[in-house]
Each structure stands twice: as structure tokens, then as C-alpha cells.
Length: 388
Image (cartoon, rainbow, N blue to C red; front, top):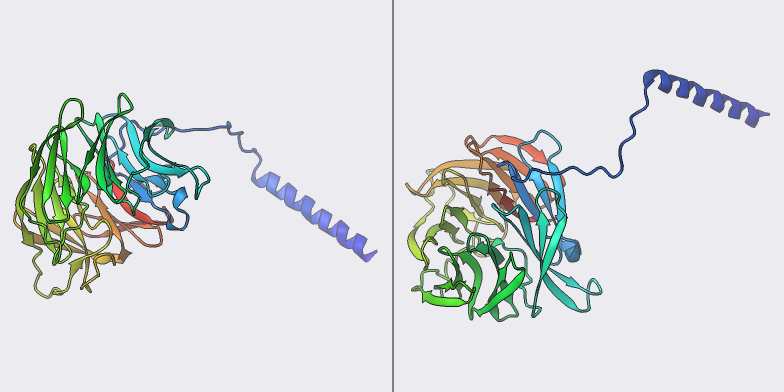
């Protein structure tokens, strides 16, 4: 009898709760159509950033998130997969995002297939793929300059590493391979002139290769040595200001390279000046350590406890540098240890710092004021690419 009484009391309680819920919410929610798919704008706003998640704990399952770092909420606008040590490269003119990626037929073993996957910027749906022959696409922690565009974005340049290095030239319109160019002792690609590329070499030089109308190697020019490989080498991902690339070095140097002509031209270097009261051991550190805004200011991720071997440790400050005057105009104290930085291309830019826990901290680049944290965007946010 006691069990029956308890059961009756529970039933009455539930009935009362149902009546209360009906009174509080007299109108049921409208049915949502399934599927419900939204489209993104064809041209992404200046506040959008592509965040590449290498996903160290599951490398075949990398991805890239499209993030509006200026939004108050709903920051992540979409996501595309980027498999197995992939690279991501948005086009500024073609309405497409290119992903260099590698698949194995048994996920972690089996036959290898390298491809460039073409994604639509509005729908984030795949539009096609281009098979890269030879199983030689470079597989390493992502660097933006392992996949680049040239010839008014008609051709893609894919860096290969077997460990012999080469570059594959890909026709994006015809979706076919145009050539494969050997680069002994040189690494990565930096678009140069109207139709060509430069690569940094292990002897401290750089080699520029002009491509002919068929995508074959034409004139080759090798510079004198300028990159101090043994004592103060350059980080290999630069900040671009127009056709000028600004590279940071391990010990705090800044070097400009002009890629506007058919052959790259060294513009010389200067040391990041230490302000009064600054730490003499402050050095660049992290993975993507330098970025630039629309006005040409440079942002360098700095580690105040830098030293030999600290170049991958990340940093706790971002130093804002005017390359024209070679001065530090601002030091932004970061709320959290960060591994990469990227400035948006807005008139009033934001500075985005990615953290080891996969969250993004956003700052007002002009004042250095902290704006917001966007949590859990990625597992391992190694690189970021501003939408323009």
C-alpha cells in the first residue's frame, strides 16, 4: 500500500508539473525544417579568420574553423575537414578554399593519396579535388607557405618533401598538374612576381624561379647568403604587407624581402629594439610568430624568457612594430600564453592569439585592450589566416 501511495503522489506531482509547464509555455515551438543549411557570404568579412586545427591526437581528423572574431556570439560560422598534416589556403578572388591533404586507404595505413580539395566558400561543400601524383606532398606540422597561389590565383604551388624537395605547379581551372620542379636544399614557396615563386635554401640563400605560360620552370636566380642559419635563422612564415614579406628571426631580427619582381630582393634587416626597462632576453617564440595589419604594422609574438631553443615555446606579449621607423610602438600584454598570432585586416584591426588549449584571445590591436575569449575553437590551433 505504501508503494501505491508513493506512486500516486509521484503521478500527481508530474501532472502538476505538466500543467505548470503548459501554463508557462502555452505555445509549442515551431517545427524546424530538416535539413536546415545556411550559406556564408561569398566574400568573408574582414573580421573572419580561418583557424587551422592540426589535431595532434588524431592527425587524420584535422579541420579548419571559420571564425568571426568580432562577433559577440555565434563566433564559429562553419568548419571544413583538413586531413593528415593538411594545409588550408583561401582564395581572395575565386570563391574557393583550397586544402592540401593526404589520405590513407586504411585510415592509418595502406595506399596513400595526396589531393588538393576545392571547397566552396559560401556552402563549405566540396566542389572537386585534384590528385597530386607521386605521394610526395610534404607532411609536417602545418606551415602556410607549403601551399600558395600564383599567376593571379590560377595556379597552386604545392611544396613536396620526400626528403627530396620539389614544387608541383597545379592548374586550378583545368584541374591538372602542369609541372614538377626540383628544389634541392630549399624549402617552402613564396609567390614572386606575376608568375613564379621563391624558396628559402639551407645555405642561407633564396632561389627565385619564373614560370612560363605552360607552368614550366623558366629563369632561375639565386641570391647571396643572407639567412644566418647557424646563429640566427628566420622563422619561415612571414607577415605580408603587399608584396613585401617581413620575417622574424630566432633572436629578434626583422628582415624584409621584396617579392614583387621576378626575383626576390633582400631589403635588409634590423633588430627589434628593446625599450627601456625591457627584458634583454625577449625573443620571438611560437609557431606563427608574426602578422601584419592593413596599415603595414607588424605584430610579433614575444617570449620574455627567451633563450637558446625557445623559438617554439610561444609567448606572453605581442610587440607592435613600425617597419618604416624600425621602432616598437606598443607592447601588448597577453592574458594567456599563446602559440600563434594573426591580425585581422579591418580598418580598426583585432589581434587574435591562439592558446594551447584551443581557445582564442582577441585584443584591440590599436590599444592592446583585451576584448574577448572564444573558447574551444580547436584542439591544436597552429596557424590562422585572416580572410583578406
